[in-house]
Amino acid sequence: MAMLEATLDRKLRHLTEEQVAFYHEHGYLRIPNVFTPEEMNALDRDLMYLIETYATDGAGWTGPWRKVYMDAATEKKSKLIAMHDLQFFCESWMRAVTNERLCDAMADLLGPNVELHHSTLHAKPPETGHPFPMHQDWAFYKHKDGRYVDVLVHLDDTCHANGEIRFMDGSHKFGALEHITQTPDGPCTPHLPTDQYNLKDTVSVPAKRGDVVVFNIHTIHGSHINVTDKVRRLVRVGYRDPQNEQQGGQSLGRPGLMVRGSRPKGSLPGAQFTAPKFVEE
Ligand SMILES: O=C(O)CCC(=O)C(=O)O
Image (cartoon, rainbow, N blue to C red; front, top):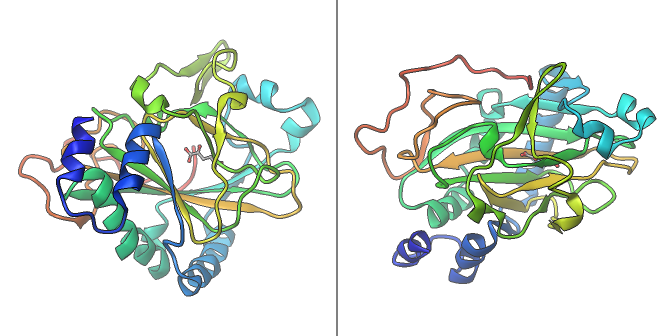
């Protein structure tokens, strides 16, 4: 609540007071038409190049959740196309992660200082495109507190059949939760126990090409398989308050671009800098 009051004390740049209040109450928000049709055309063209040239096309996330979400035949076929940090590879994506409207919206949610943390492509191929088990993104890039917003840039319209994003309403208020990361056979991709967290208990947030759907690093979310005959492409972009210290995971110790405001003294990551990885592990 203190965070919301601090936000509403300032003049908003892109969002309305209602949108900011909705995000803080529910832990997610759809923001329509952040990108213009012309911007989307450039992003789409370059994304196809990046997918052909750099992305991985593999089985996707590992773990016992797969057998709960998919029958044996689907599980064998299901694929995920993924890649990290698209802004390092082409101009259109560099412009997307620094987009005026998007970064203004981030300042409305995070405060005057906003740092870009990473971007990640998740494309679900047609017919058996990879579902996502319930999880918090905190488990992938642990930060000290909730001052971190994930943004899903929609390249395609989403709906139930192609696996739109789904959130457990208000779940960001739970804070960081322990995830399953180990099985008797070894480590697996972090996810929440399937007997306690179910996609049935989520709200769907379908969106249009050019919209973004944003959510808090602690908001529990997931998505169904894509059963349509077309690919479903989303690019997630993470922004944080630079004073929200990272404690583990993706891009740990790597300083990001300051896209709004400036970096307060003492908040430069780097002690444990790890080289960027551009493909999903
Ligand atoms: O692409 C999806 O459907 C889900 C993505 C997701 O869970 C994430 O980016 O954390």
